[in-house]
Image 1: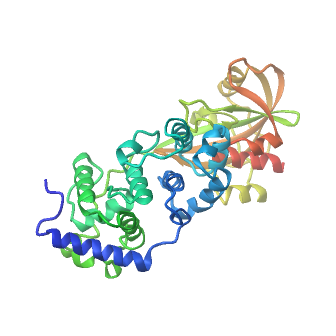
Image 2: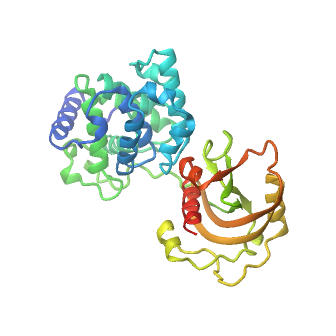
Image 3: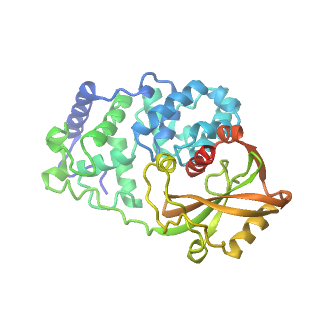
Length: 394
């Protein structure tokens, strides 16, 4: 399998490189992490940009660098502090790996980042793309990169007629990326192809007339730019119903830090678990108030609303709350409902508040009482934060 299209040669490669770099000199995006070749800033930005848009990352990046200006500051921080700054960005394993890797760089590499992609890949959370990005952006090494934007751009450029996400497709794209990257201006070239992929070679309605690679694009030449890259199979979406229960004692709420094996590991949350449709049918959510609508940004209900007294909760739900916490809990009051999605799960979250009647927090359960001030300081999941804001407005 060739690494590059048929009927191309070193002259074709030279023209592609020249067109890419000329376009970048005139159109490259101005981003905060491009202001220096500091490998720490580049590393943080690349981890944040995984599965996240540039627009969403910029404010988080600025706050993160203000709080942890170098790898030693990050290594010295508590994981909880890192997660708090990451709150709302999602994919929290990125933050945990970032913190672990900082500790390794600080202790095993004397605070100096490895300079080769192979060495960088040994750090937690750094895969082939991130390693190539740091090696090329910080040290101008001709390391290949393949991510969402370059995957699309390269697939069209060479008219890749197999799944670019499959084993053979990935092998071919990485081989091509290593062949095409500029040897003299690797950093600029890799930044450029990502920008072209993002701004011009878009997933839908690619702007071919504006593309500097139009004369070289094999998919355009064949009239296949709209069908390449080949679509991946969409995952089967699973609907899940969960409850989040804010158990209250005076002016404190019961929270638990999620374990390493759970979703949102390291973050804090209220009592939360999955329930059946039959159990959910027992809960009548109140009509949304203006405050609720503001916090939840106009989400609509998935269940029938009823402003009257709710039906009794299913015994199994009440029993699960008491078994997991060790507390006797009553006075369950529905507060709101939140819709959100995590990977292939579409979650309907029903939020309730309840009062403690007796019992003691079960030893080893991980639950502890938190004040309103602590709620603001602890790292919560996005839905946990939304629920906490509603509770503080009541």
